[in-house]
Image (cartoon, rainbow, N blue to C red; front, side, top):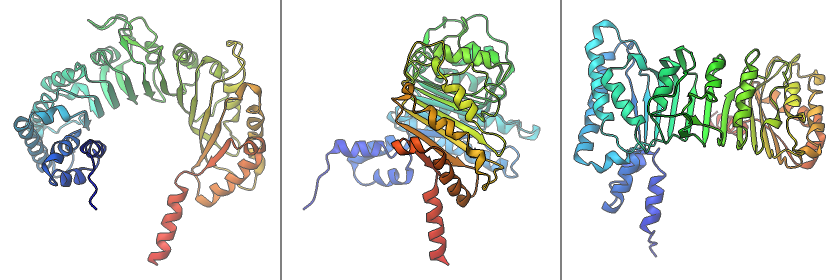
Length: 423
């Protein structure tokens, strides 16, 4: 007996296959009723990658890039409804210096990219990876500014993105008036001077950035961190739900703690990048956050003579700045990178006993899970360390709250099994 699946379910399935281009292409040919949904998935995410200017076949790569863009432009002009289907645009490697003998090619590439971008009117997410704003043509800059101005744009990611000044970066980002998620991965400004006035037509705190903010950079200037609290900043981040930052070391850790205090009122998820190898200053602690539910500590470093435990204890030590007797934290995840350890010197793990005792205190009664992910060593070594670490934390382990994991351990086992079968 044939089973008929409602068309609404078919559409839902096709909408969630946007990363499976080959499958969607086949689905578009099954029957007419599937075609529009499949086509919508095919065009949901577009990636434009600038050809490698130092590749020996750069001329051929540039020609292929332009031809692909021309095909997309013709498709959009022939079927205008597909332009609205594009929700994510990813731009890669638009920060390359083009050799003098290929300058004409560069202009053609920029023109092709500009013509395509001008046809996008319903963008939700914009990703810019390895870009230099000052190397783009004025026409391409204007087309990108038009994308930032689209009311539908709510997510922006800039990775290894260079721009002349923090003032220019602020001006660019402030065009996205409905921005909810902002990710800045290792941004670079030649001038980090903090803007003293809000961007034109975008008053202070006029953009409610309330979902997620990520600022990654080990050497980021303190002025950039404090800019989000400055009167000139167009973003309101005091209702932020998720924050991801690299921990800033002295002497700028005071500015870092000030920002966390500023955003801590409604923060539920916090991701901190270590290695947490310095002696803690005590400025950063759980008392800065009222509603924190999930804390992730990445790149925590464990060596024979170094452990992140003092940093952890300092962070969770009860603070005089809060009158709350209990923490709202439910899950703590620590990504522990193991380096230069003596597997037989179990004393180097003794400090973790203090962590075990700490989380038995009444203040952390809401804590449900302490997950420790072990990285950086051979699988057999990590398994032995896993047993040692569990042995140092008997109380948490006894309550069922402790989870010590080796990521991809199952995948490693499967590779071994496949190797045995093939041999």
